[in-house]
Length: 315
Image 1 (tube, one colour):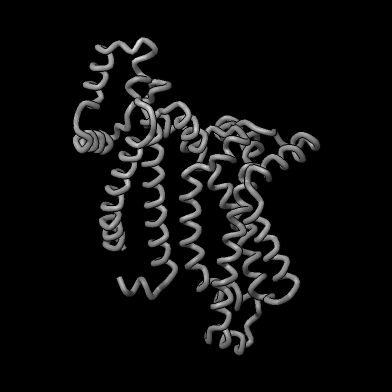
Image 2 (cartoon, rainbow, N blue to C red):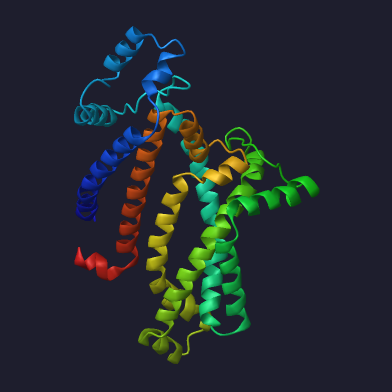
């Protein structure tokens, strides 16, 4: 298993290098000059020259990338132009918020999408199947920002059950933290649940026709045992891969949802950074997001080996 993980890490290294080059090049393509922003309104030529020398902006672009990559490897992602804080500190303060939102969203997605997908496959062609597909289509079609606004209007404004916006750390007030996160997590979770439902249904339909499922039924096993122990256990592999990718997508920051509910996570951080031309923050967030995606893919690969005994013997 350890050798398998090491091989996957070695494969991920070239991907990380390409991503870092893309992130650095993207910053160069953005309009505006961060040095002019740092120089202030006076824009003294001497100050501009000193800043360009300090941040190595007078070097050729390949050399600038090498300097930047070397700083990243040392854990230095730069300084925010707007707040003058280390980018790594900003990311570390926002990451727990995004992780909490992502975990709660995935919980809603699992609770809704997987049971609906199983029921839809088992009851194929019945009203249950049609209803599950209708719910899935609605989840994919309804925009997150519209659903979020409607939930705020109904649940917060009209009923007064939950706060309309804001965030509280679970370490400060767990109850209030849960209250502020339920609606945004539900908004994100419904869209993910629709995707999970469709993939679970497709995987289950393929497995339910397999010979070992027919054999299990012929042995007289209860339907619940056949579906959950024999069918779903073998249909879960593509769902695991999809779940890891969806979780990585959530770590990138749900921009609109975080803006609507005023949640200080990755999404809000990168939007503010783009509007303020805070390029160091944009680079840091995008790079951390890419690393998160690669880590989630590694987790999916490891879970594949754990869940599938045939893959374990092949290692």
